[in-house]
Length: 70
Image (cartoon, rainbow, N blue to C red; front, side, top):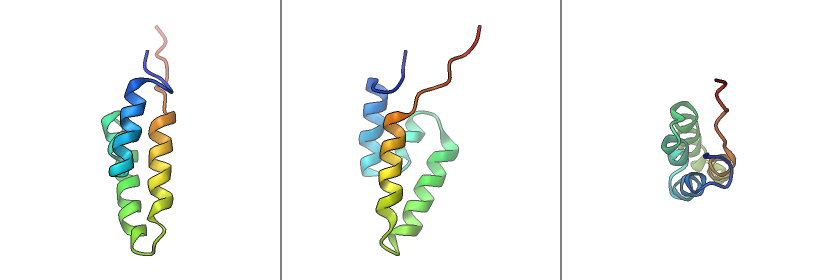
């Protein structure tokens, strides 16, 4: 089971450290990955991109997929 603290989340958090949104993309969450990447790029110009960058890392590390009912 992949969830918070799993190896996949650790890897996602690590790649988000280098490129915001890449960890979410690795987890298959394209929409939020695009939002975080675009916001980080825009906000780096006003020196606030680090906020989105940290959000991206923490979100990738804490994400757990919803369990499917059988």
